[in-house]
Image 1 (cartoon, rainbow, N blue to C red):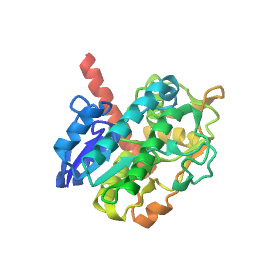
Image 2: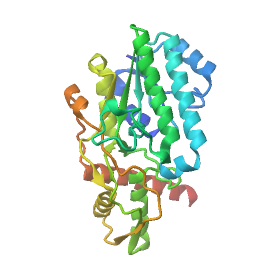
Image 3: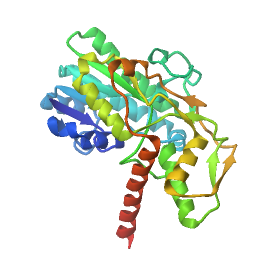
Image 4: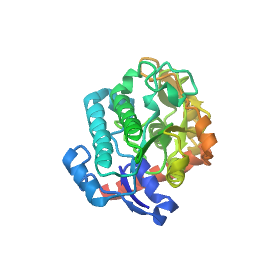
Length: 313
């Protein structure tokens, strides 16, 4: 297939490009300098000229709690513009298939776990990332509306759980939970620090999938697109407490200190575990264990750190 991949230089996009099936298809992944998705006319012109058979929309402004709380306008508007522009450009050009990558942030903060696809828009969103979540909900709904109003177009949404892995961001200003933990514990290991601070009690629970596994799931969805429901979660089927993740990282990288807790810090939703019922019926499950995924991600982080040190030496 001729496939247009947006966000090809983000973590999810780069894992999609690294997958073996990327070489079996004609995958076009323009940089933001080549395709500005916030520019409506430029997006329409690019899609019309390319005429892809499938669009995988993985682009977005992403970040952890700190970044979302500091930049709510940008997280809402930029993700809203990107989602609207690529979906409407696809519709205008009669692109038959679009696979929109959503986020578990789309679920209401008080929705019962495991989070079922039907509960989107059933309640108030988590305030710490509300802008990002609103944009993701809007794009998913737009895909649904296009599919319902145009029988020749099938625009579907995958809702992954939290993702980490190769090509992740480790800068504390923008990183998500697990890469932030890896960096903090690594720094403690280097300094010989006896303690590492955890935001909140550490009892909040999160579900994390290795980004390479998500890429495999996305390629499976692309290959079996007609079997795919209109909206489907992608998860690992179980979660861990934040304290568990800190302990796992410490064990994998060999730091033997202890943890303290700052109860004044925000922690977001108390639990965010997606239902994998539809995913199991579809017939796909991730394959990488948590410890293996942390180890591979830590090796990637160390290579980035080594490269940075060489650059500054």
